[in-house]
Image (cartoon, rainbow, N blue to C red):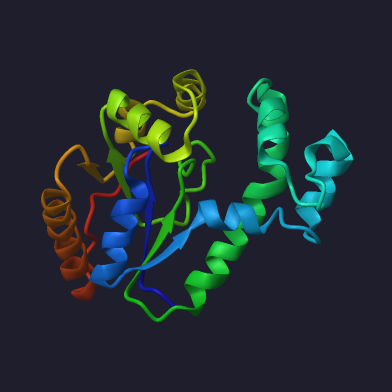
Length: 210
């Protein structure tokens, strides 16, 4: 079981996955909640049945798998529908993440999730890193990666908390608008501080008051 649980978050296009890969190279055990989110709605999983019960078979592909685009067009247009989907998926994602982290013998486990703070899934975390980048950089990254129009990327960003709001809850903020080498240096520095504190039994970050 990991000794310290770190939350790693950042909005779409922030570079969160790149930082997650660097942390993996440095020895962290990283659980990607975005990948788990796909697993919990796979064919045969209870969440997919609940989704179909609520929104009908129109949110399925011909092969019975989830049509994520069709579902997104529904839930991103209505906060109540989005909340309903999150109620079906988030508890299952967290439970699977906890299972994986409990089975790891790494000193530090990382729960990486885009909506970590929005979902309120922070009570079990001992630290939070926020990954950021300027909005225009994020938009360009997502457009190039996913081949989607700018308006769609902006709409997705609008459904996430602002970086300022997230930064108020984060222990470390890392900007990824740099070379990969410079980013790796920043992540390594923050990681070294964290490992040293945890290894010596010291709290690496000040305790937040509610």
